[in-house]
Image 1 (cartoon, rainbow, N blue to C red):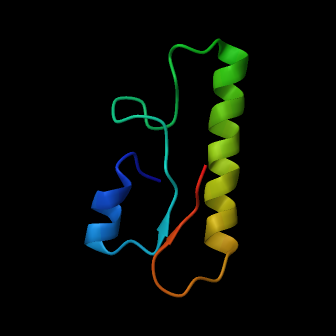
Image 2: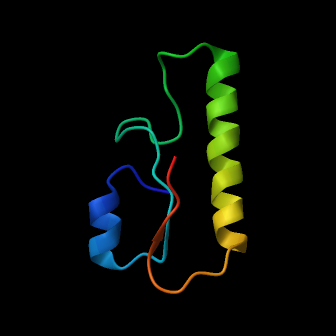
Length: 63
């Protein structure tokens, strides 16, 4: 999970999940508590799904 995909590509990460922003990678303080929870929950599910997915080389799991 990263906020700057090109850096992850440069260092050779196999599974890359783009997140929200550098100061808040897994959150958005502009959202209310319910919406932020949903955002975090969905990002976590995406990361778990990425770990279950067979990949060959670098793969970016888009938003």
